[in-house]
Length: 323
Image (cartoon, rainbow, N blue to C red):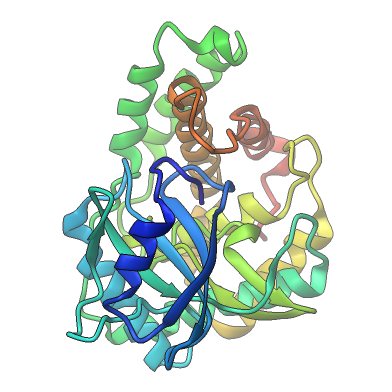
């Protein structure tokens, strides 16, 4: 989450007039993340609650994809998954306009995002991911993965000549991993709608219990096991990617497998998928590191944290990690 677009108090109050949310008390920008502009909104006297997240959709979110995201969240909520639905205004509209951007008012879910999860929390996250995959089995929406293998080549080309702004060794790592993944990427694994971005800050926890999965704006149709690989890369390392936690890894994988059995092909593909996940976030972070506007209220994320993960997954000594 982040803030790229300014919203005044008057604009916010006029926007909320279309909802049964009551009177605006306060709102503030949320700086975490890099994709959209987000605000925590508080009201009083309304029928629909008192705390909300207002999201303005920025650079990477195609407005044409928003109906897919809204339908997915509604479907997951109806299947018992803990996800935040978009709130409709009095006329039933979920997707609106504010400050020249598409905008949605989102349910606020209780819980905290963790920076250092413990094994019990990793198990719960693995279970929640598997339950999400089960819940979408009868969801009829689909969306191509806009951050799949083809996009990695494009991001790398957009960073050409600028790698030294991050680390001189990064260009060689990216080039080698792209060549390997292009040759080895599996194409026949079971497909599903996936979250594709289930970092610890996208999982809300109350103690060791998952209270919400949030930020579905990379969700798409892709290999189900790739979602597990993305989550593994996000949860099982120190924030700088320099150290791997085998206890968190075992707990996360156990939680997922307790709910959903991987096929032999999915199991065999996990090492390659994990290398892809690490490279995907290396590249998107590198692009953002180079291109984030200086005046944006946004916290840039270090691309080398995932470059180190990519090196870890590529090391033959770690080949049995997912066994």
